[in-house]
Length: 113
Length: 110
Image 1 (cartoon, rainbow over the protein chains, first blue to last red):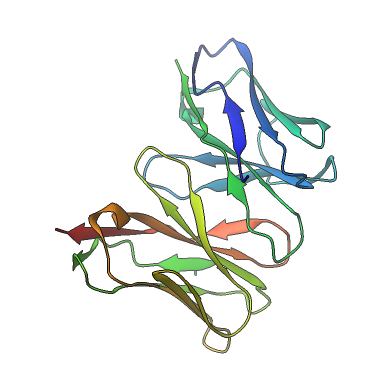
Image 2: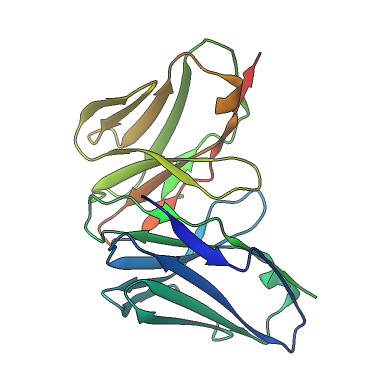
């Protein structure tokens, strides 16, 4: 089973709202990732958690705040976003070693109004 | 120079033909290489991984890696209309994180 789940599927929020994206995997993977993907562009890495610790932050603005409550869950807290933050937000997980591929969830389509 | 480069396409092939997708990378320390397929409006799906020089076959897919020339390719045999998608090349330079190419759009004509 290579399933990564994400909720919600779609989210519309205003620039003053606070919302959270959720991601879950039950494959025993030790690494989890957040990516942002704009239309007709490849996924761009935002954050990497390895063994529940933040290992990579790709200089993401502080209005995006990741959280890894346990090895199966990954959250992305959103606050005071801008319209240009509208995108598909993808969660992925992997075994975490150099030979391991990453498995993506279906994504959350975020629209900031 | 981009870290991972792909021709954006579209690459158009007739049904039943071999589709050849290419990717070059700049970091000689890159260790792992992956091909993802992404249908419009969907998330990327891992279809092949390769770590050693040479060919790796899985069904209709063959991945080829040449570290000396810093390129990786994906061959799709007996292409089907359902193979029409964007194919993303991804490279792990050792950070345990992927850098993606911009993707090649493949169109298989019935």
